[in-house]
Image (cartoon, rainbow, N blue to C red; front, side, top):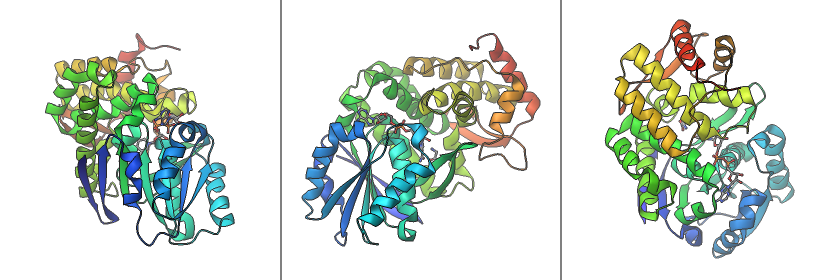
Length: 362
Ligand code: NAD
Ligand code: GLY
């Protein structure tokens, strides 16, 4: 088993990574827990619900399951209320534990519910997609979407632990694996150029779910994310680098309607666009732009952005949380393995969008 530690003011907690970790979940239940509420969806429940309930019941606590509809389009106020309604109806108290069993949608919603219920109860992240194992379950960002913007309503709220069972990835569709790989390669681009090269050499093995390769990719991703959030939990500076490619990516997601492209797919394509912008405004060498494009394509993510006018792109990107005083700010790469956040003139963004025009699709 690998262990990665997260050290934030909001909580110090372990990330355990191992094949078969679902069977050991009782070890992560705080002794004072009065009841356990698993928050999940029918897809994940059908695959792993019984195994997780059995493992949690070993703690001797009452275990109940709260079922949410599956999909990004349900990451909303009304779905959040399903959790609160049930927690209250079942009379759970301040010593209850919420277990988020699922991908990033479940993790973000269950975490936000934990942050709000009785002003905060403990929660455990049990991420079951690659994207949630390498990114969303670590670092305490929780949220729901608003029709005017993604993840706009939320809280920083750290889990008591993150329990990663690598074997659950065997049931994940290939498209979801590719979306998770986009976030894996992101860590190489923004923080660790050697890891970027390792990903390039091991991409076929990763896409074929080679167990040692996946375990290393998950561990290294969690290490980088833990290092970043341990320095800047609330994104007052450094943490924003984790959003490389996300300004373009979030525009793609909200412009097409949540759920058309997967989050990781939009980020993958967004990283290609952000690499082009980096070349234009802070000198990322063309060979690195090329390498980023090739690795995104090798991961199986789309590389051709939607064919929108520059005005539409700029309007969609205004909703980004990094925007300050109406000025767009982007995560950029001066060179591979190093990221900075800076304000970018709209004219530079327009120039990059123009370069993509010949390759865009409706
Ligand atoms: P998801 O949660 O929608 O899961 C993708 C699909 O896979 C769903 O249909 C789900 O039911 C299914 N699934 C989950 N585990 C499975 C398994 N083991 N086998 C088969 N199917 C399985 O999507 P996601 O990519 O995990 O997460 C995306 C969400 O994460 C977005 O809402 C995004 O905003 C959020 N996110 C949050 C952070 C953060 O820091 N909090 C970071 C990145 C992304
Ligand atoms: N996924 C971006 C962050 O956690 O900050």
